[in-house]
Image (cartoon, rainbow, N blue to C red; front, side):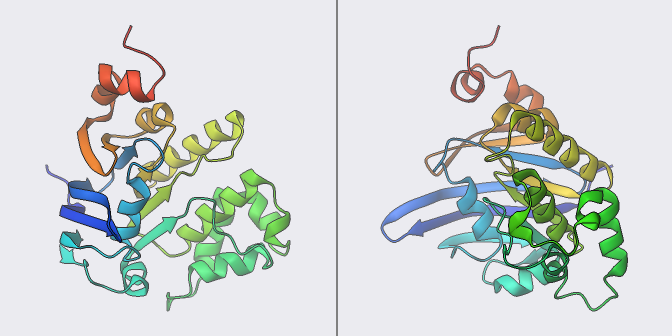
Length: 240
């Protein structure tokens, strides 16, 4: 049985002044999937996430979320509708406590947020232990946990992650991707922008390859991982 379409991007283009950042991009994310966006720095992956969230203005094309056109919708309403972004560089508020950062993630929810806090603390026990600690004093790995936890506090239908492994040690990168897989198994739909193409494709169901604002390849993640062009450009060598 076909899964419900959560996100559908139809032929969008985005420019920064005279520079075309995205050219006629179409993609979709289905319920329960991890979909990876891979490509070099500056390829357009982050620009796409910003367009979905309403941060980057779409010049042409349409973005549908749960079947509803959100192309020109303000960012706060897009977040309230069920999309969260785990930003590149984590984006935590370093002078506020762990708890205050998490509470901000749920600012638009009218329900009691204690249940959401408990879920985050079960997923990341260290955040519960350090709830009163100033966020800027956490380690890099703990700050990434906090950034993901803050996203979970918004009760998202779609989690978008922008370069979540950036700046993490190899050990913490492995922990991060295990966390992403675990969140997906719990029912979260994830759109993952990631320069670590090998790890991204290992955990994803499907993938899209970006080059200088263009979508050049897409398909099943395992098939992309074995594609000679992808292996040569993003995985460190040709297929064996």
